[in-house]
Image (tube, rainbow, N blue to C red):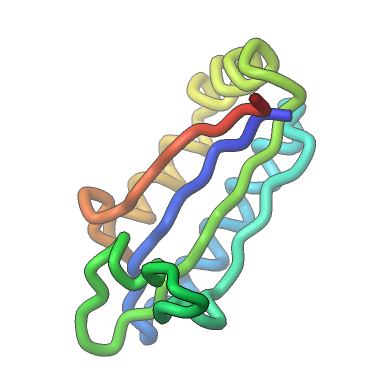
Length: 116
């Protein structure tokens, strides 16, 4: 299993538009072979059980909520194959342009994780 994870700070007033754009992108990722692509709203990001909270990973400003996107693939090769197709999709470019009007992409945190 191989995961691509995004943490997005989203203004509460832009949350529905963000989700609308992301759900369309999720459909495209799955169309090109992603096992799963889902977006979640943070329920708890405060420190707990002796751990730092996710609140320390992304600076949230007033009226912002933290959103998490997880895309799943079989492995790194599968991830690369799917992303090559996604990156060439004209709809993704349009969705990205819409997204830049809803969130500050430069504040998004991204990572890839594979099974050890």
